[in-house]
Length: 309
Image 1 (tube, helix red, strand yellow):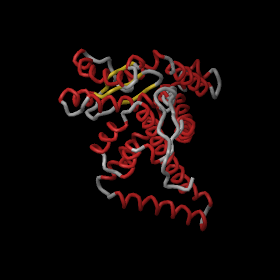
Image 2 (cartoon, rainbow, N blue to C red):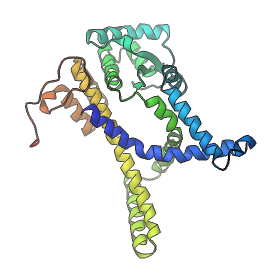
Image 3 (cartoon, rainbow, N blue to C red):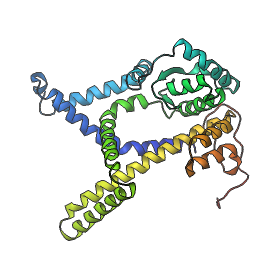
Image 4 (spheres, rainbow, N blue to C red):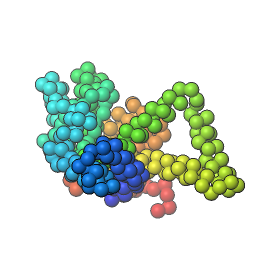
């Protein structure tokens, strides 16, 4: 997985969210500014123009170093590590230095969450969860394992894939609120219906839309079209998540922490895709992969392929 392919996957994943967020912002602007007299004097599209201008300015400000820190504090609820947290993370910093990942190149913050989690944001910000620090403190997680998780996100960040995430967070704020609401509704429905029944309902809904569009009115095709767009967006976001993970995996290979990360994956997940990732991390020679970041030793070349290419 090259950075170029990962960027294409990211662009595909942003198409529908961007197209939906833009009109949502316009509606928000109309509701927030439409009643204000001076804004109304600008004409029918005055609130929309001011809203788009404000969102653009905020997105540009978020892409700065100060904006990146502000977003991490407000949206991710991240804070500077306390004394005991810095003490707990000190052995992790030593492991990072030994493996050629300078920790001084990132601004480390601590965010909420009980799971072991690390999030890269913008150009320098890396947010580790309190759950990771607690696991380090209790000995459930070793310094090498924590360093591998941080290195994975560092690889994604240093490849430039997170560079404009702060601006995207501002522009996609309506989409985030909407998709969170959909996830809540889906979760409520899942408590009463099995996953298979819910998927069957979606398939039946699409089939009814096609049948009504064919026999009654072509406008009925819209329900099937909406479902197709939703499924395509889900596929695009899932593909982007996997592409992002592959870029981080390649960075782990370059800094000789891939085996440690593979052990952590095996101990945490049991799905087939993650097990495949663990095998690729332990045996990179099984398939060809290009380097994605300029520093570090070269990645092993392919000596065995399961395809004809």
